[in-house]
Image 1 (cartoon, rainbow, N blue to C red):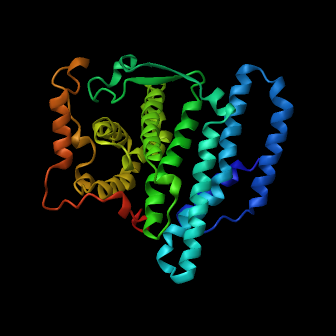
Image 2: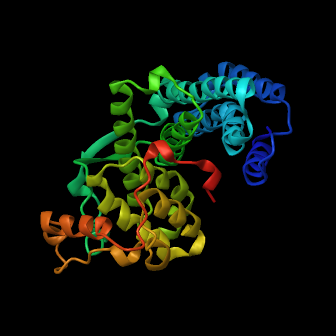
Image 3: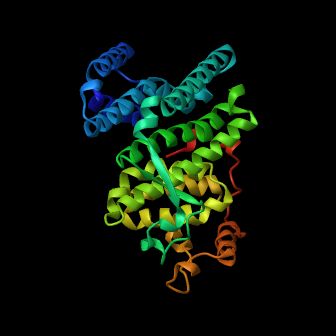
Length: 325
């Protein structure tokens, strides 16, 4: 299959701001072949092999959205060049592509195949490894996932974060040009976004737990995890902050994201101080002392204190992808 090429082509399209080269018909034909093979081969696969096969098929199915996703990105990058009827046409295409990607991801995550391979039990947050008890707040949720098939957690967090970024950043930028999607403006959709943040956090915790002896192995999860910085509410930020601090300790690859979050949250000091400088170290090496309400207030104060060079916190409505790194 051509997934290796699609991955490279998609990356090049975003870096160079150029359209995809391979015609859409190739993706459609590859998808048709996979669907035919599923019907023929699934009944004969052992449970262990079937999990891996379903997961791979879900990931390849997700490539169906890439032409529309890339077109959204390219249109937003050059939206200021359009005027009059041409702008209206571009906005209409934006609306169609954004809704298509969102609807496709939602249906894919809710499909019977996804339900089987993403199966997970919820376990109390207290069972979360004590490895981070000395350096991180307790998780801002009551339970974490334990996946029946652990590799599925990485694919799930990629799919969830793609939808989250589309809805929180790309659609917000598109609205500046006049894009408006009724389904995105309902109270139910806002609740859905909160659920996505909740699931991304718990899925990240599940991955972190399974790789607790190899922190460097979390690097592939970094970019999916970062997306919640654009939509997470105040109660998630201290925990999220400390996790980014751990990524920061692994290398400078986090710098472009640091710049983006600094602009979005109006915190220019992030560029010099970094996430690690805002971490709260517990006074005692006991889980009970990790982050009480007073410590939570201290973290929030550090994040919100006045500064002469502090930018105004950027409203999500005003996010302009033309300024992104």
